[in-house]
Length: 259
Image (cartoon, rainbow, N blue to C red; front, side, top):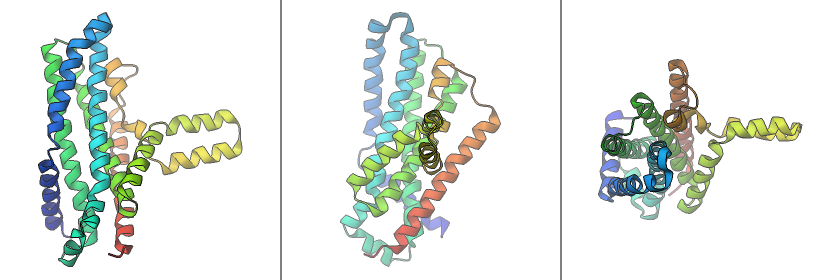
């Protein structure tokens, strides 16, 4: 794989997604926060600060998830449907470079979105004089970025061998299941059914454990102390390794496809 060529192609993907006006979502996020900033105190009273903290991070998560899934599942399929894939693979571009560039380009877009939304979010907190744990907020947004990069890898992998519609539905399902895999294992143990336990254990091993990358509640409510540095590094490494494995699968499948 040629790194320079992959980076250049990733830059093209980044610019293409930006040209699709995806960054207007940042303005949409600001409008939602402005409405919530005025409306929440009217209904929540003394708990309005905590609710706004939670709402800002949750909205950031939802917007990033929509971008990762809907853009990610269509990145490869769009090239196939438009037949531009025939031009691309006819050039001295390997299929592994093609997949890697799509992933890196969209991950860069998500990084820009998360950074911009975090700045807007912190701006509203400053204007509203809302006290917040800055370190916890930054860690929560960093791990949100890692989670969305992992979902991007899922979306691209599923988009390689299924239609955009099916890939979108499956990626949403993976996201939902990935957030409750630990609960599924606990449920399997409570059932005291060996068959159920094997199923839940298998799901835990196959599906990504996204709860490892969710620090929103810890940052907002302080329900428990943030994980220690070793755990944070381990969880970050887990997300990167899982994303790499998914991209390897996507490349293997893409190499076998005929156009």
